[in-house]
Image (cartoon, rainbow, N blue to C red; front, side, top):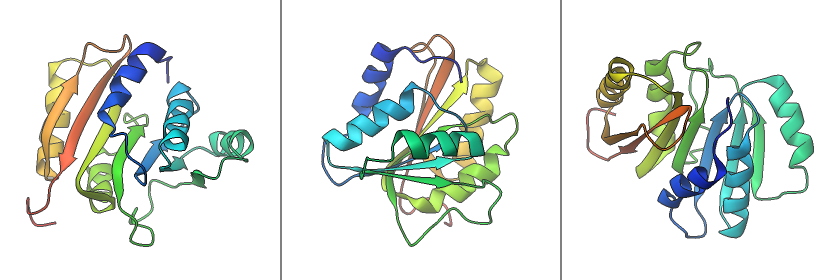
Length: 173
C-alpha cells in the first residue's frame, strides 16, 4: 500500500465516534500508517482493535511491534476460510486495506456482513479508480445489503475510500 497522507488520514478517522468500548476490526495485507493511527485511536478511546493480518510477514512484524499493547488483538487470518465470524463478536467498524485485484469482492463483503454490528460501518481503501470500478463496488455493496454507500475520491492522492453501512432488516441476511 502506498503512503497515506497523515493529515488527511486524521481527517478521515474523524468518522469514527469518540466513545469507549468500541470494536474495530482491520483486515490488512501489509504494514502502513493506518495501523499505527488505529492503534493510537483505540488506546486513547479505550476501544478494542482487532488486526487481521493476511500475510505471514505482516503478522510477524505486527506481533513484535505491538507486543506490549493490550488493546490490540493480532491474528493471522486466512481470507478463504468459510466464515469470518468468531465467537459472536460484532464490530462497530470494519476497515479493509487489501489488494482486491487478488480477492473476490463479493465473497469478502458477504463474509463480513455478519460480523458488523447493525448500524456499523465498513471502510474500504482501494487504489484510485474510475467511475466503472466505483460503480462496481457500489453495486456489489448494494447486492450484499450494505446501504448509504459513499465514495471519497478526492481525499488521498493514491486511494479512494468507500464507506458503507450495515443495517438491520435489509435483505435476507
